[in-house]
Length: 125
Image (cartoon, rainbow, N blue to C red; front, side, top):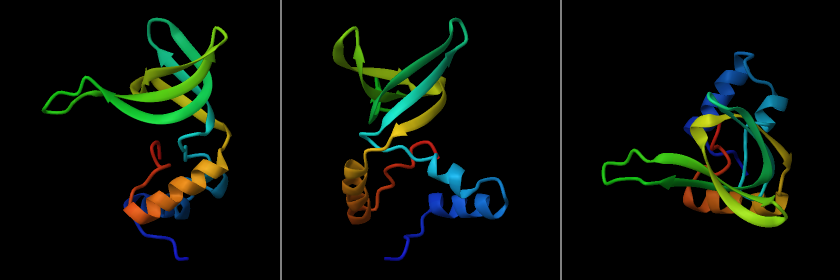
């Protein structure tokens, strides 16, 4: 099956051709719901916070009719011995690393992507 052309794919192709990205870095740019990820946030007043959990997606909190709500990462993690869902402001995200890709979920999401023309997995890249 031929790779579909979209803006993201084209931008990445150009960056690879220019030597800014290589295959190894390209693989690390995508994150999918269900992946186990290490997130590192930086807050100017308190410094760094590191969280390891499963990325579930994005959610916009407090969006008004004109838009402008903050984009939050939705993360499932174990905190104080119990599983919980947290929302973290994406503006403070310093870096992330996919520790365990969930290939079963990725394949199903890529099928949705192909059917509906969405670009799931390219949230950060």
